[in-house]
Length: 186
Image (cartoon, rainbow, N blue to C red; front, top):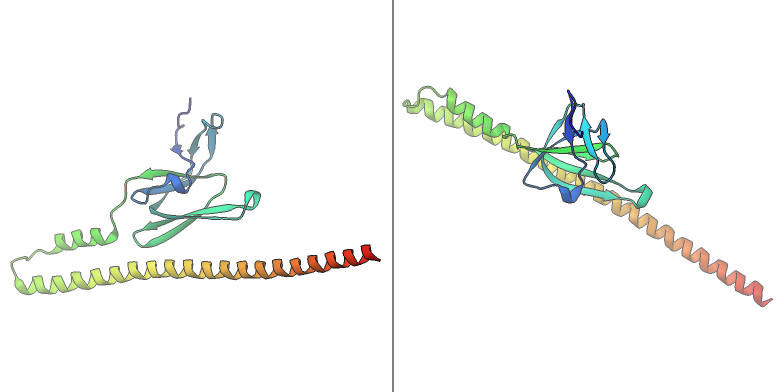
């Protein structure tokens, strides 16, 4: 028992502390469960999506109104998976970045290594290509950082509104208590 059927892959329910920032993961929604809690085994017949390295976790809410998400970085491309009851992951070997692949393929294309003129122009092209991909990767990280900053600012604004609302409710409560005391005294 607890075997993957044809076309299925075994996957795992994972949250924050289960992930390692030095490892890469794939994601799929589970389609079948075997066993009983706490010894359940999960399987998916869905195509697994490569996410890259684990970056961070998010948690919000309380009890039945709580939620969470896991954040990943696939060589500069950020992916956020919002968790639900079927979210599953699997640890996989990390894929090389496109930059590494480009460097290797550019070296293989350079046929006339003894010609200094060819080497200079080839090196300039490689440097320009590397700068371009570094800029894209850097821009993606900046976008990820900016979106996180914006999300934090929104949350801070929501917290301030809730605190203000709470203060108003306390004032109303105090007024009602005073009115009750006055009624008791009359």
